[in-house]
Structure formats: C-alpha cells, structure tokens
View 1 (cartoon, rainbow, N blue to C red):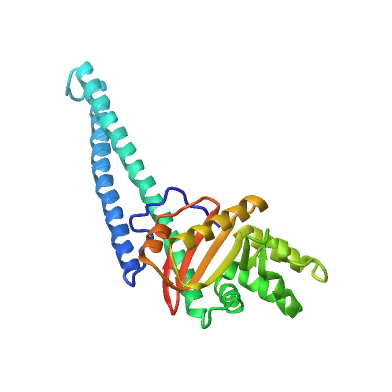
View 2 (view 1 turned 90 degrees about the vertical axis):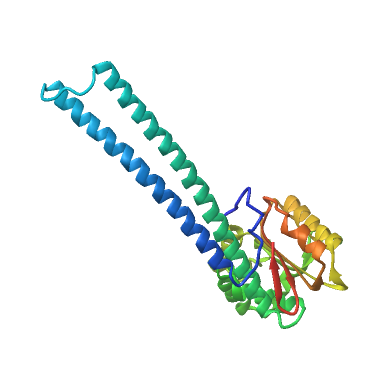
Length: 274
C-alpha cells in the first residue's frame, strides 16, 4: 500500500456524494492552469527561435538587426524568462501530482469505508471480518481460500493482540496464518498481507457512543501493536453505534506514518473515513 505524507487535511476527509465532482473540477482547473503556462512558454520559445534565426541571417550578412552585445543580452534575457517559466511550471506539476495522489488516497479510503459499512448487517466481529475480506480485493481472495481449507482457521483472526491490554476484535496479519497443510498457498497469503499491511478492527458497544478518548485509546493500541511487531498497519477500523462530533474532528485531523487508513464507521450505515 502506498503511504501518503503531508496530506492536505482541509478537504481530504470530506465525505459527500458530490466528492468526485468537486475533485474533478479542481483537476480540470489545474490542467487549464498548466495549459495557459504552456502557451506562454511556447510563445517565449518561438520568440527565442526567431531571434536565433535572425542572428544566423545577420552572421551571413543578409540582414542587420541589433549590435552583437545588445543582441546577446536580449537572447540571454529570453533564455532566463524561459527557464523561469519552466521552473514555475514544474512546481505546478509537482503540486498537481501530489494533489492527485492524495485524491486517489481519499477515493480509495472512502470506497473501503463505504463498502465495509454496507456489509455490516450486525455489529459483531465475524460480520466485520467477512465485510473486510469481501471488500478488500488485495487480501480478500487469498484469505477466503485459506479459511475454505479449514473452517477452524477463521478463529485465528479473532480476539488477538500482543497483551491482555491490547486485544482487537479482528486482527488480520501474516503471523496468524497457520503453516500446516498450506505450503505455497499459505506463503502467498502471508506475502499479500505483508504487502498490504496488517488489518485491525475494534467494535465499541459499551459505551454506546464513541468519544474522543475512545478513538485515542484505539489509535494508541494500534501504534503500540505496530511498534511491538514492527508491522505497518494498512487498515485500522473502529466501529460503533454512534460517534460524537468532537471525536470525528479529532479523527479527521489525525495522521501517522504507521497507519495507512484510519476509518471510523458509525452504524447503521453512516460512514466517516479519516
């Protein structure tokens, strides 16, 4: 999974039916800006080419345009203008690429959160687990194949952690894959999980409402798990019946390189990805 740094949190965490339209308009505006600058650059280069042509004609004695010293100054000035435009254009292109990367991150995160939320008919760990593997294609199919060989394998993903204080309702990582009777197929599952990152899920039913402290405790436990196991957490899911606005504001502005996607799901079907 690609990790995005320094994300623009001003609008990245907005979830709206018109989100794609909004970002499409921004992308079109960025492309138009680049297009206008390219026209200016093209005009400068054409002027430079004409001056070089005139200089060649002057050397041949066909025409007399400007004294050589003044002519060199003009050419140098145009060259510096062209370099300045190129540097400015490069800056816009790099910023646009960063925005597009971040938008791709948002779209994927919102899609994951929406699909998992739709699949949560009940707030229980088994339903959460199957909703995860049904909607994350990178790891879903390999894990389905793994648990189809032995139904008991599914239990290795529930109520797991690193201590009695850090336990997750759902924990999907390569270390939970049993090596017996698996061979290359199990190695494939492990490699896919290591590539995507660990998936952790926690369901909060008591208290009924998830507040800021609950999210902080969850994030802290995820980071402690990541530190203890030296594993990157690709997806961290916190699910509850209700979420306070203060908690959503806190989660919306949270970011950490050890966590790919932090997604907060509120039932029955209102999804907030942060």
